[in-house]
Length: 477
Ligand SMILES: N[C@@H](CCC(=O)N[C@@H](CS)C(=O)NCC(=O)O)C(=O)O
Image (tube, rainbow, N blue to C red; front, side, top):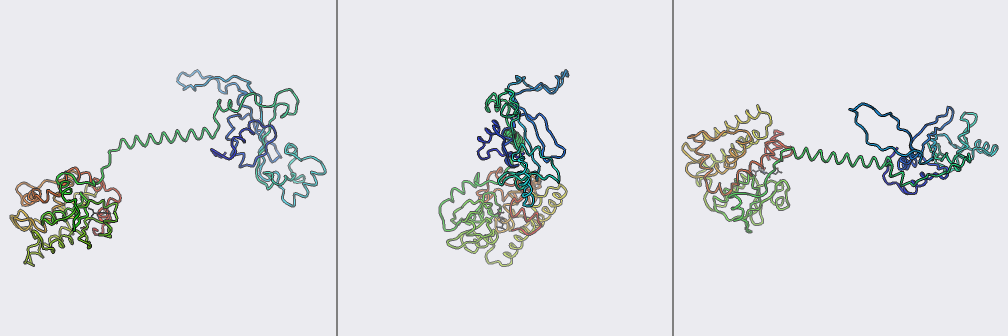
């Protein structure tokens, strides 16, 4: 049966199939569509099959006829008892017969039609569906043709519904009234039809599912995501640099590449406007400056550029404020660039590897690699420091700063990254970076980093272009 909740002319069809005042002929589609809307009115009593006939009849009683309970009461005290109230018996006498005609039962192909018409005319029989049931089914006596427009005229399955009680229905003139002794509403009150039951069930299922999902969701620890607003001292700096300026830094509060440029701007005391951007949403203002859609991006008047290392060099070339590369010393400048390259090539990717790797053993080996690369950097630094070139913060320090900040705020909580060994050269460097006022001015509260990097630590799919590059083993964007 099909379950069509609201087919055309439903009320009219329900009334016809309730009253059954005359034989109703239905196509298979009509029967399957409309009968499930009245099957609550009737209850199936018996089926009659015929040996050599192309149809089958089903007898249904009005449900309000009532009948003795089918199963005797159980004495088992553990058996779940259905709540039911006995219905009064014999409230209605209506019986219907539904006859299902098999495909081809009344087929009227052209070659058949002529014969069939002859038979019809000759005998005067077979002019209605009742008569058709008495037609023996066999090769020698083909079934009569059905008139054009009849649901079975082209050989399709079709159905008839007839009332078989009462003077109008059973033809016995036995004084039994024809129609129901109650209204259709009363039948509906007693039982819902199949379509209604199906709809109610699916609503129930849906509710169950929703509740189930809600329970699952509420049991799941809330997933953290990246922040879109700086906190702590960084929030103050954002506020102080919110006014329009010729030089605009498009940045994101959690982004280490942005922090490089941000620290340099602060160090050099260059006037700038900070514009917070969600780089995963890639607004037009960002794409206009960086078609790759990554932060940091810098707009200077009507010119724009991106890539943190390139931007650091650009700020250097502006020759304003404190220089970060030693002026007039090409060899030392090259030395700084070489170690900045080491940071970009080895330290940054290994930081993400340790964080994204889910396998404990792989975490340990990536961690070892990161340690080695940091160690090489420390070896290349000024022996006393505390910074890379000595007492003053400079280019290489600015390049490594954001990852130093994130070793203790991200890699430590997520991967157990150890604090620097007390008294070591590394400890002195980390401490100098942490206490630098310009670094502090661009650093948010610890929670912002912890939350923002949970995506990396869980290696959630499509966390970022950087995360994808690490997972696929390709170079960082
Ligand atoms: N190589 C770039 C990397 C910049 C970068 O990956 N920024 C991240 C935020 S930390 C970004 O914009 N991600 C956006 C994305 O993955 O679609 C640089 O040094 O500036």
